[in-house]
Amino acid sequence: MSGTPPTELFEPYDELIEIEVLGQPVQVPENNPILRCFQFLDLENISYGDFCWNGDCTNCQIKVFRPGEDHPRGALSCRMTVRPGMRVVELSKHIRLSCLTPTETAR
Image (tube, rainbow, N blue to C red):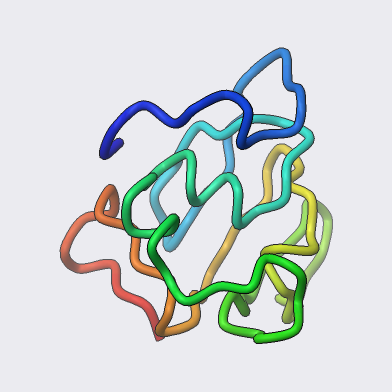
């Protein structure tokens, strides 16, 4: 994590849950939009990224498998709430997460 995110950025949460981002398991705050969870993982890159945070710009597009689904769905990470077991399999070119290993890149 690149800095400790201020807690006022996030919806209230009691625990961190595990999701997978580009094949790497990560712990993120429950009850939050996925884009906020990305900000939890990489405060600087996401905070200074080109995001509107309300879905108008579509720069936060991802592809995600929700638990029990066989096919990924496209979503705006600012509008989709994180759930345990989600697998984010594709990130827009605007989402940069320094916590991922170098072989895991955005598409």
